Length: 188
Image 1 (cartoon, rainbow, N blue to C red):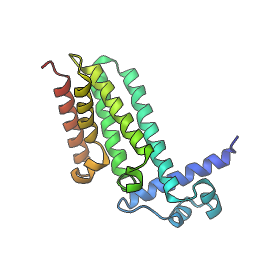
Image 2 (tube, rainbow, N blue to C red):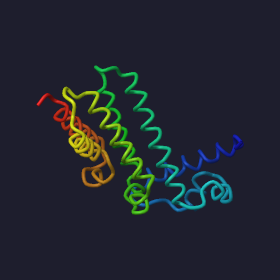
Image 3 (cartoon, rainbow, N blue to C red):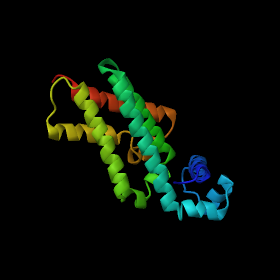
Protein backbone atom coordinates (compact mmCIF):
# COMPACT_ATOMS: atom_id res chain seq x y z
CA UNK A 1 0.00 0.00 0.00
CA UNK A 2 1.36 3.43 -0.94
CA UNK A 3 2.23 5.79 1.85
CA UNK A 4 -0.02 8.80 2.27
CA UNK A 5 2.89 11.20 1.79
CA UNK A 6 3.77 9.49 -1.50
CA UNK A 7 0.24 10.15 -2.79
CA UNK A 8 0.43 13.74 -1.52
CA UNK A 9 3.73 14.19 -3.38
CA UNK A 10 2.22 12.75 -6.54
CA UNK A 11 -0.67 15.20 -6.30
CA UNK A 12 1.76 18.10 -5.67
CA UNK A 13 3.68 17.17 -8.80
CA UNK A 14 0.49 16.95 -10.87
CA UNK A 15 -0.72 20.28 -9.46
CA UNK A 16 2.61 21.94 -10.29
CA UNK A 17 2.49 20.49 -13.80
CA UNK A 18 -1.09 21.73 -14.33
CA UNK A 19 -0.18 25.21 -13.05
CA UNK A 20 2.82 25.42 -15.37
CA UNK A 21 0.73 24.31 -18.35
CA UNK A 22 -1.80 27.06 -17.58
CA UNK A 23 0.96 29.66 -17.22
CA UNK A 24 2.62 28.75 -20.49
CA UNK A 25 0.04 26.98 -22.66
CA UNK A 26 2.21 27.00 -25.80
CA UNK A 27 5.04 24.78 -24.57
CA UNK A 28 5.27 21.97 -22.08
CA UNK A 29 7.39 22.56 -18.97
CA UNK A 30 10.66 20.76 -18.43
CA UNK A 31 11.21 18.28 -15.62
CA UNK A 32 13.43 20.91 -13.95
CA UNK A 33 10.49 23.32 -14.05
CA UNK A 34 8.32 20.69 -12.38
CA UNK A 35 10.90 20.05 -9.66
CA UNK A 36 11.16 23.76 -8.91
CA UNK A 37 7.40 24.44 -8.98
CA UNK A 38 6.51 21.42 -6.84
CA UNK A 39 9.06 22.24 -4.16
CA UNK A 40 10.02 18.58 -4.02
CA UNK A 41 13.39 16.99 -4.59
CA UNK A 42 14.45 15.86 -8.04
CA UNK A 43 14.55 12.22 -6.90
CA UNK A 44 11.00 12.40 -5.56
CA UNK A 45 9.67 13.86 -8.80
CA UNK A 46 11.52 11.34 -10.99
CA UNK A 47 10.44 8.44 -8.75
CA UNK A 48 6.82 9.29 -9.50
CA UNK A 49 7.27 10.37 -13.12
CA UNK A 50 10.42 9.40 -15.01
CA UNK A 51 9.76 11.83 -17.86
CA UNK A 52 7.42 14.51 -19.15
CA UNK A 53 5.50 11.96 -21.21
CA UNK A 54 4.47 9.92 -18.19
CA UNK A 55 3.54 13.10 -16.32
CA UNK A 56 1.48 14.37 -19.25
CA UNK A 57 -0.29 11.02 -19.54
CA UNK A 58 -1.16 11.04 -15.82
CA UNK A 59 -2.44 14.63 -16.07
CA UNK A 60 -4.68 13.88 -19.04
CA UNK A 61 -5.85 10.53 -17.73
CA UNK A 62 -6.86 11.98 -14.38
CA UNK A 63 -8.55 14.97 -16.02
CA UNK A 64 -10.57 12.88 -18.45
CA UNK A 65 -11.63 10.45 -15.72
CA UNK A 66 -12.90 13.35 -13.60
CA UNK A 67 -14.72 14.94 -16.55
CA UNK A 68 -16.45 11.75 -17.59
CA UNK A 69 -17.40 10.54 -14.12
CA UNK A 70 -18.74 13.99 -13.15
CA UNK A 71 -20.92 14.06 -16.27
CA UNK A 72 -22.25 10.58 -15.63
CA UNK A 73 -23.21 11.67 -12.11
CA UNK A 74 -24.76 14.91 -13.42
CA UNK A 75 -26.73 12.98 -16.01
CA UNK A 76 -27.98 10.50 -13.43
CA UNK A 77 -29.14 13.33 -11.15
CA UNK A 78 -30.46 15.62 -13.89
CA UNK A 79 -33.66 13.90 -14.86
CA UNK A 80 -35.06 14.02 -18.38
CA UNK A 81 -35.96 17.71 -18.25
CA UNK A 82 -32.42 18.79 -17.24
CA UNK A 83 -30.34 16.54 -19.50
CA UNK A 84 -29.53 19.28 -22.00
CA UNK A 85 -28.43 21.65 -19.23
CA UNK A 86 -26.17 18.98 -17.74
CA UNK A 87 -24.79 18.29 -21.21
CA UNK A 88 -24.05 21.99 -21.82
CA UNK A 89 -22.09 22.13 -18.56
CA UNK A 90 -20.18 19.01 -19.55
CA UNK A 91 -19.29 20.48 -22.94
CA UNK A 92 -18.05 23.69 -21.31
CA UNK A 93 -15.86 21.68 -18.91
CA UNK A 94 -14.51 19.62 -21.84
CA UNK A 95 -13.65 22.81 -23.73
CA UNK A 96 -11.93 24.31 -20.67
CA UNK A 97 -9.96 21.10 -20.09
CA UNK A 98 -8.88 20.95 -23.74
CA UNK A 99 -7.89 24.64 -23.66
CA UNK A 100 -5.85 24.22 -20.49
CA UNK A 101 -4.12 21.12 -21.83
CA UNK A 102 -3.90 22.07 -25.51
CA UNK A 103 -0.11 21.85 -25.67
CA UNK A 104 -0.29 18.25 -24.45
CA UNK A 105 -3.33 17.23 -26.46
CA UNK A 106 -1.90 18.54 -29.73
CA UNK A 107 1.50 16.90 -29.25
CA UNK A 108 1.98 14.06 -31.74
CA UNK A 109 2.88 11.66 -28.92
CA UNK A 110 -0.50 12.30 -27.35
CA UNK A 111 -2.54 12.34 -30.54
CA UNK A 112 -1.10 8.97 -31.57
CA UNK A 113 -1.54 7.32 -28.17
CA UNK A 114 -4.05 4.62 -27.28
CA UNK A 115 -5.01 6.58 -24.17
CA UNK A 116 -6.03 9.64 -26.20
CA UNK A 117 -7.96 7.48 -28.64
CA UNK A 118 -9.77 5.94 -25.67
CA UNK A 119 -10.60 9.39 -24.24
CA UNK A 120 -11.98 10.53 -27.62
CA UNK A 121 -14.02 7.33 -27.91
CA UNK A 122 -15.42 7.80 -24.39
CA UNK A 123 -16.37 11.40 -25.20
CA UNK A 124 -18.23 10.24 -28.31
CA UNK A 125 -19.96 7.49 -26.34
CA UNK A 126 -21.22 10.01 -23.79
CA UNK A 127 -22.39 12.32 -26.56
CA UNK A 128 -24.16 9.41 -28.25
CA UNK A 129 -25.83 8.41 -24.96
CA UNK A 130 -27.05 11.99 -24.56
CA UNK A 131 -28.34 12.02 -28.14
CA UNK A 132 -30.27 8.82 -27.49
CA UNK A 133 -31.69 10.18 -24.23
CA UNK A 134 -32.95 13.35 -25.93
CA UNK A 135 -33.95 11.95 -29.31
CA UNK A 136 -37.60 12.08 -30.34
CA UNK A 137 -37.05 9.23 -32.78
CA UNK A 138 -34.49 6.46 -32.66
CA UNK A 139 -31.34 7.48 -34.53
CA UNK A 140 -29.81 5.02 -36.94
CA UNK A 141 -26.37 3.83 -35.79
CA UNK A 142 -24.53 5.53 -38.67
CA UNK A 143 -26.36 8.81 -38.03
CA UNK A 144 -25.71 8.54 -34.31
CA UNK A 145 -21.99 8.09 -34.93
CA UNK A 146 -21.82 11.06 -37.30
CA UNK A 147 -23.77 13.38 -34.98
CA UNK A 148 -21.64 12.33 -32.01
CA UNK A 149 -18.43 12.98 -33.97
CA UNK A 150 -19.53 16.48 -35.01
CA UNK A 151 -20.72 17.46 -31.53
CA UNK A 152 -17.63 16.08 -29.78
CA UNK A 153 -15.34 17.85 -32.22
CA UNK A 154 -16.73 21.22 -31.06
CA UNK A 155 -14.93 20.86 -27.71
CA UNK A 156 -11.77 18.99 -28.69
CA UNK A 157 -8.29 20.49 -28.81
CA UNK A 158 -8.07 20.21 -32.58
CA UNK A 159 -11.08 22.53 -32.94
CA UNK A 160 -10.03 24.84 -30.12
CA UNK A 161 -6.70 25.41 -31.82
CA UNK A 162 -8.59 27.28 -34.54
CA UNK A 163 -11.64 28.52 -32.65
CA UNK A 164 -10.00 30.14 -29.64
CA UNK A 165 -9.66 29.41 -25.95
CA UNK A 166 -11.33 32.35 -24.20
CA UNK A 167 -14.72 32.35 -22.50
CA UNK A 168 -16.50 33.69 -25.60
CA UNK A 169 -15.01 30.94 -27.76
CA UNK A 170 -16.01 28.36 -25.16
CA UNK A 171 -19.57 29.67 -25.18
CA UNK A 172 -19.63 29.71 -28.99
CA UNK A 173 -18.42 26.10 -29.13
CA UNK A 174 -21.01 24.94 -26.60
CA UNK A 175 -23.78 26.88 -28.37
CA UNK A 176 -22.80 25.33 -31.70
CA UNK A 177 -22.70 21.84 -30.17
CA UNK A 178 -26.15 22.35 -28.62
CA UNK A 179 -27.58 23.57 -31.95
CA UNK A 180 -26.23 20.46 -33.63
CA UNK A 181 -27.62 18.32 -30.80
CA UNK A 182 -31.08 19.86 -31.23
CA UNK A 183 -30.94 19.25 -34.99
CA UNK A 184 -29.97 15.64 -34.41
CA UNK A 185 -32.70 14.88 -31.89
CA UNK A 186 -35.55 16.84 -33.44
CA UNK A 187 -38.50 15.10 -35.00
CA UNK A 188 -37.58 15.32 -38.69
